[in-house]
Image (cartoon, rainbow over all chains, first blue to last red; front, side, top):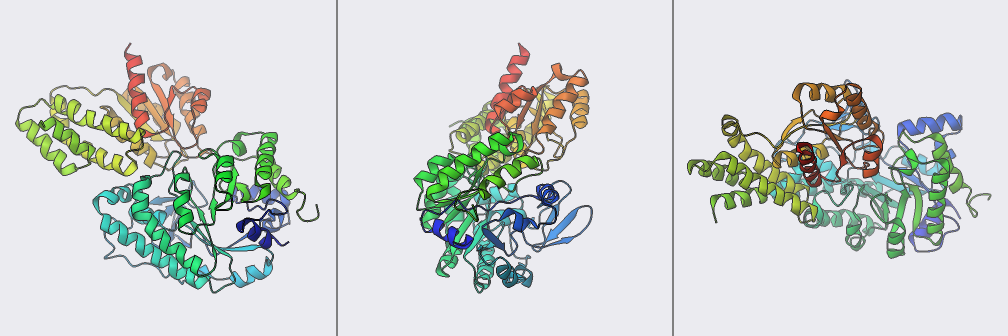
Length: 338
Length: 214
């Protein structure tokens, strides 16, 4: 089976020949791996099963002092977080869209190179990514504290903002679906270490109907829906399944009961992630990383699971710990030449 | 319902304009500012904290309540100062060096203020020596450190280490918090306490202050 077929089998509730994987790394972690693997490109060394297309966090223009501006006009300070950055300032200082013009969702840069990448990694499962896909896009424009208070103060504005963001995403998804894709992957962090940032009531009132509209576009196009939300959001899983989500990432073991949820949602929702990036990877020994990886691979042996660290691996993770899980997943019986 | 009851409810409901009106009305009726603060604003924020801890309230509700509380407090502050009413305690708060995330820290600051503390916010990406300078200059009862990332958590240990080096550790309690932070980590680095959320941070701070007074 190709990697694409293995992922499809997992999505269709079948027992795969081995547990597939798709692991992400921050720039600092990638640098450690690249130094280790030498001339081999990381895409080839990692053997990920998902081919990520589009641009999850979008495009940026350098301004000055480690600062960049995204296509929405939001300035990001990258002096510390070098991968994404931290928002500086507030593009929508008032709760109105009257003076704001959304960028072009069909900007060719989002689609450049898609056919070539598909040809190059023809055996992988193709995923078009949209990062900051709703609530996060809204707060990066409006400021997080402002937006959270807007739910109470200016509900009409919040609805308008979320729906306009959804229109932008839907236009982009429709264009992306002209390529031979398998899934669309929406990233949007709603969770915190305990519970949902805006609470389940406001999530259901404001976020859910807009998600439903975005996910419907993907399902009607015959593609799978993958989503990512950091934090403790498992109370939303039933709602997410109702509106068509097939796969949930990052499946953080510090905030949710990974084995229990995998069993509970088997054949209804598949999980991608699961390996502790808050504890085991940065602070554990190689043996601890191996033990946790083995547990996850065993758990996912019957299906419903794609292995990964529960976040892009950060720069504080020792190289040996990264290699420990990479070697185990690639050494599974049933994979490649094993 | 009395003005104080209405005031308390307006803070819980996050109705900033009503809070301001009721504080003014209470002052016009010669209710002592200290009573308005303690029975109106602080008890309201205690209730907000309780509702947050039992998942009746979430961050948006906490933010609008804290905003209402702060608007009322702003009206009372000059009068409290004139009447020599002291805060429950003083807290120096910040997100540690290398970390720019501040919403968790801001929420903790708001809840501490709502619990009657004077809060000095050093901001985000705060180097250990800046906490130490603040402790020397401001003589707080508590230092509160926040970090969202495993990569920046060690910054909390640096703060405690530098306070020890400067001989200041016995003068302040240190509390820590942030997504990857645990009770165990707090114990490992010698912090006085950890709180998993802003409401519990305010309760923890009050407990530590009581211990300090004994």
